[in-house]
Image 1 (tube, rainbow over the protein chains, first blue to last red):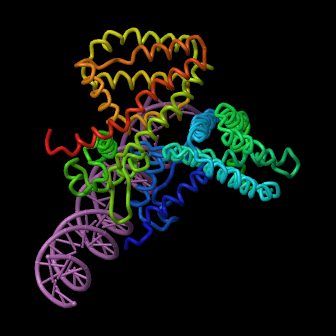
Image 2: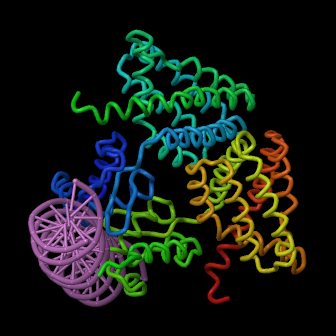
Image 3: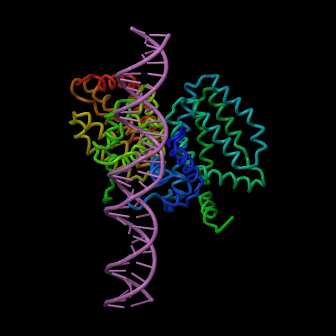
Length: 230
Length: 230
DNA sequence: GAATTCGAAACTGAATACAGCTCTCAGGCC
DNA sequence: GGCCTGAGAGCTGTATTCAGTTTCGAATTC
């Protein structure tokens, strides 16, 4: 019955994606029976996966009332962006201090190789994937798996809003989403020069620029989530 | 059957405490049936609680092999301390920027009121509780609930080692554990003066001072955990 | 004596069953 | 009309059950 890849893991992955994409509307109550049918598993593994997601902040839980989607408010999103600043700036600082030269060079290389894709990509999903990938690699540089873990969690919860933000930028710029590759370059440059203050400042301003748009992005998110269709 | 206070919550709290105190030895496999009897609940709610703790990093999980206690290594503890630096320094920075004067004053007040207790306390457990309480209050000042959440999680996982560190300091100082109250005062002073750089620097050095002893503390932890009996 | 294989015991994985709580809505009351 | 009430349906909480996997030791072989 139990296979190599557990049912809970499969259910968990599916649910994490659904929660990240707000397939459940903010504050929506989650019906376990219905969901277990959709996912093709019984309530027992489903509830185990739901409990993990509660611990990760994707869902909330009320006794005898069950699981709910996390709320979506500007304040919540701002908090997530600020937490990202905390984690990524410290990761940058640590990378400046102790990342091996060759790993830094590899990251710079990665940026160079990705540039064509970055410049040609139009789909916000692609851009976001590349952006997240860069930030994840940078976090790897610092060699601290806790910071990586926290960042991964924050990114999952903020992804939906970042996607909206990218779409918004694309629409404003007239069909072309602006890659942040120059900002990324500046950060890597700072790290390569072991110039901690410069690298951290670049990272901070890079993230905070997006944070300022959180309120507007949440407004758009709501209109997308609750407009009847399309 | 289901009461006001759920069984899962009760089991979860008990397990969190056990995991924090390394009632399970590092890497030890956890027997669900035995544990469910000890805790007076069936395996279903137990597993739900265990899953939460996996998501929080207190335990690990392997398919078809069950739950294990998290490992305990110097590197892991250093990572936790570094993550604390990230979170608490940013919390300090935000507090400097936007905490209301009266809240800062309240924290300073709290420090004054606690001073006698701080000076007279000898039990490391008490000292640690007061120290954690101060840091939690400071994190509240920044008004970011994500940073508070992350800090709470990190503190839970690092507590055991911090306790050992305090005991070690007490033993060295000859029966009296040194309160860090002066360091705390300096941080609050920086915040009250809205001197961001000073406050953050004070916080950073306050935490990093402890981090440097992590390796030694882990060594002691191991000897305590594996010595036959006291 | 060491390595290997096989089988039983112990354990985990997941479905099911049912008890108890919550929510809804019809009906009665003010 | 608005508000309370209570029964019923639906949902959650948890124990139990059994299938499938891992583990461990004894018997066997080299």
